[in-house]
Amino acid sequence: MADAAGRLTALAEQALGVPVPLRIRAWDGSETGPPDAPTLVVRHRRALRRLLWKPGELGLVRAWVAGELDVDGDLYEALDRLSGLVWDRPAEDGGASPLRLLGIARDPGTYRLAREALALAGPGLPPPPPPEEVRRRSGMLHSPIRDRQAISHHYNVGNDFYELVLGPSMVYSCAYWEGPDATLEDAQRAKLDLICRKLELQPGQRLLDVGCGWGSMVLHAAEHYGVRATGVTLSTEQASFARKRVADAGLADRIEIRVQDYRAVDDGPYDAISSIGMAEHVGRERYRQYAGVLYGLLRPGGRLLNHQIGRRPWADEEAYHVDEFIDRYVFPDGELAPVGSTVSRLEEAGLEVRDVEAIREHYALTLRQWVANLEARWPEAVRLAGAGRARVWRLYMAASALSFEQNRIGVNQILAVRPDKDGGSGMPRTRADWLGAGRKA
Image (cartoon, rainbow, N blue to C red; front, side, top):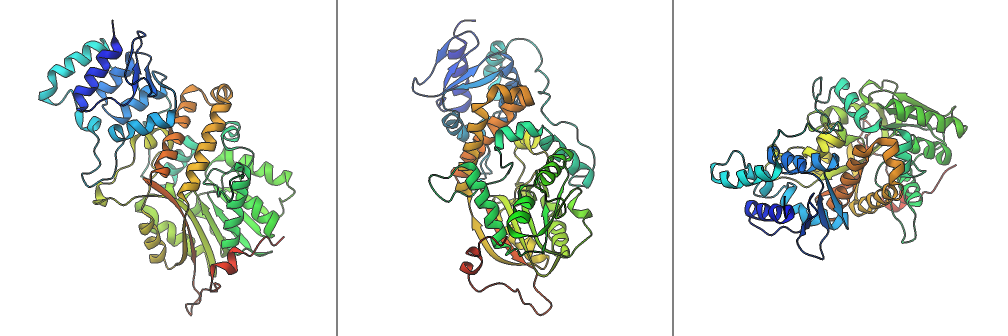
């Protein structure tokens, strides 16, 4: 098949009504497009069959995960150039993208275009989705059983793979970059310490870390602030890794790691609660319950630090839907909310929000470092997690970095307190009083 790249480009431009922003290299070796642009490599005609049956993001992602599509050149630039054509944006027009609206096989006005695309794609039905895609889900949305399934899909990939990506800190959330020479490890320590200072942790206090991951927060708080800490996670692999870290640090008498749903925690009150990168899994239908549970677990005067990714508000919030790639390949059932909605739900539960710090630029830096870690040890990552899973991670982290940089999503630390019966917060009058507190132990 001669000049498949030229035919692909012509079909895409007819369908989209705009020039293709990338160079294209096809399976027959042909190549066309801007010479200074990253190259979209179409390794097999199966990629086109996937797109014909699932126009838009999902078809592209399936081809990417299966290794039928690749990018030669700067992945960030390629994703940036494609973002306006493929990924939904919560705009006034509903955020629909041209590819998503195309629907070649269903629009009577595109029969000729469909016939040409089918001829180029070759005979046959679309291949099945890659095995990395979540297809079957059981249980009510955001029930404990279904949440456990979702967490297992994302976090039980293997601790060795996560250590490769995240580095020795094993912190899977936005770092806090305090200076131009900071390393990822420096920035993650700074983030954990910032949270401890915002919570004003004191020796002997009880800390609950909801969604404790591999135990980094409870370890930092127990070692440097002298607290007694409990971490809960739904991931058995995370819990096993965290328990070993706790034992190796000689802190088993002060730290407990549980495989437990936060809704099942019943040994309050706690002096402080940290929730770092966990609330994105709660879901908007369950957020009032989440806020109420945490309120009930805090003593009067106790503080909550909620560190959470947020999205831009939609003009019609009822039209909000979860990104298909993230939902099927990365965080099943995950949902993002605008920061204002999160603040409202926390206050409706009886908490008083005292401080909100937006740190989205910090997450872009963090994600770019994680991508660099992954790319630097790519063969090992493929051996540990499989080629498809490694490709999922590279795409989702690079695309997320761009989303933070372009203000499509953000991340916020919300500090709240449970007032006492007289309405007192016990909070200092100024930020300087707690931000400059420093380590206690």
